[in-house]
Image (cartoon, rainbow, N blue to C red; front, top):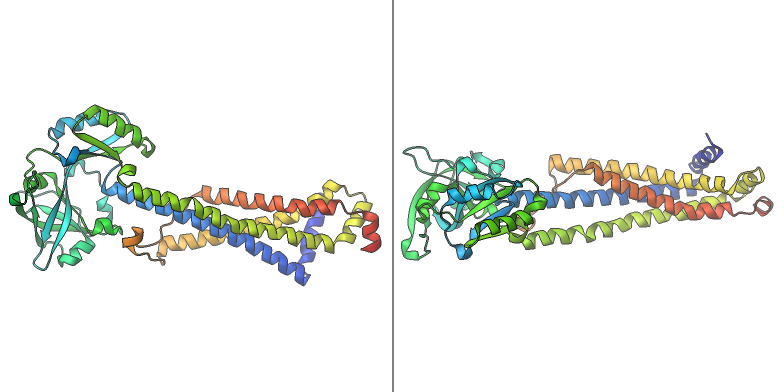
Length: 405
């Protein structure tokens, strides 16, 4: 062990036996720990928000959605599906759909819905992940009523349960009220995603039954497209638009939900900066802590220099103490952040109003890089803050320090 490391270790042990220095060292460690934990928690929560909202929005729509200008019906969907699939190797799957507003009535109530008809064999949606009652079954058995899947909040308002019958009223493809048609459906499943905008409104059935209800014949209202890499959605949308042309209109999920994703970006930018100031304030405390150590060890520093200690060696002694405070605080902060985040992931003890935050509990996204990057920043700041006291200690005159120390 080098003499700077040995002396730094002895100084830290001595500090624990001195009340005031021990207290301010403890405060410095706690400050670094709280700053590190706060920043890690903030980043994991913001990452969780982004992932949760993105997954749910895409799960109910798609990466790229093709619709008709002014809601025009789109014919030849079988041929167009093949053209879309061949338009780019980045396209993973394509799903034709028919989505229109309708009214749903039970024996107790009536409500408005957005009914989306999907081909069961090409279903890309992740609604099945959120099923809380029944099954996600939109296929119709021969001779049976067509199936429908509703959100839990909508089902509660209609006072219906699994197997109950509901009547759906929809207008024809021209949209005229006089062409309204009614069909009975059987409730086969109830989902709850935590996003009120979907749970309150969206209902799902098979494409064929939706075409019958809305009198669309063999036409559809659009296509859902999933890509292999979400970063390529813009290029895929442009390519598909060029392939299909009028009256097809391609929009990415970021364009369709611009306000929502802008809100996420707005939250991501200032929060880490604001909470990062906690780490900066905490690490600056190290300057005061080490300066007090330097003042308390002035005579010792003079003796060390008279014995041949170099300026570099003196700097190393106090930098090591600052790094020890930083590493101890960072490790404690990591453990605290991981414990709280993991507990929230498993227990979901922090609830949120779904009509405001699009989810029922605080989402957490634990990634190793969050811990590594923030820990590196924290320790790096502690190192920088240790340099000034260490440099001042190295400039102490050994003769004056021994005489007047």
